[in-house]
Image (tube, rainbow, N blue to C red; front, side, top):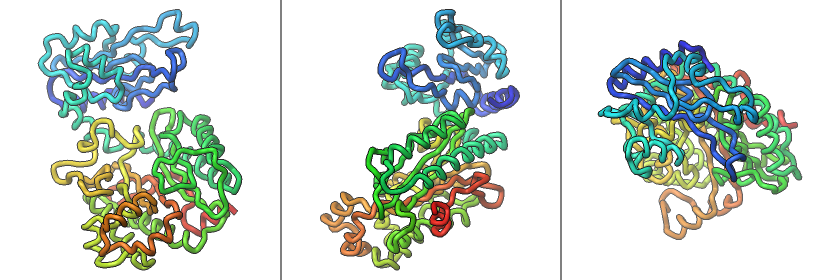
Length: 458
């Protein structure tokens, strides 16, 4: 938790941005895994944490702008629960810790909003909160997300997108844990070790140094599968292991990195060729990302460099600008260059990606591949972005596009066929946009240049 004044200042700024009405920010409830007493590890709602800081379940933060009054709403834990969980501070004491003057039991929430013409809330991601908000406001639960306050959404996005010094320090702590995770994976990567075993090592590191993994670790020999869960498959000599993993600190700020390790200890010539393209695209972002630059343009710069280099290998052909405009590069890069990161590894995605990553100037693309770009807007100092280009050879996509004759003016299908068993390569680091450029976050950078990777794992 940050200082009391941090939360007071955040709520004051939020009041000024929203202007009028009453704001409800719902915290999360416990979520049962398979029966009520066996719950998933509790994770508080990020916006509730941002404005009210408390980790306890069953809370609602209220900011009454019109009456300049704030409440923390929730029921105190009774003795039957204390027996099992230990002492829990009262809601009054929790409110005091974050500078909220008033507290009340949950039954009082309806009275606070009774007759109020402007009730602002954020779109919930959990169905129990959809039901709770629906009951409170007389809305069908399936309409709750659609009726969320756009004014509040935009105010929260505007605030959370720009990270303060204390937030950057917390992200750096997550980066330090992520470094331990990734370097452990690289050292453990060898033939015969299972993906699941290495994935378990990473989860243990995240739990022991922080809160948890910032998302379920992706660790697989099938790098062409974007969300490849670790399996019980033993790693095989000659193949590549892709590891996309991150940590979340006890204060719930995240890291997100991807590395690719040669299981035999050395990259083959063909692996070096593809890896070096991804490496060059990754470094292009670090060289060029700066305030005022559209992230959409940054993505397209990477696509053009990738196309040029793939032409050198005989995998693409034709005019580079025309190929990218047509979307032919999406045979190899089917996702966006990167996303915002903070308390959520895909920061604020639950508030609506069109409000987080886009604006009136830059709208989302509908083109295959580029339509998965989660941010396109102009960069600002304080933004934290992931830089994660990749090249993937997806057999099903190769077969589909080849059968349909897609982009034959730009794609060399005979050569592409030679790579259908290649897998995929992605390199990812987290960058902070500074006043005049960007910097890679993390005191220690996980090795990613080809020679450095080979030297590290040897």
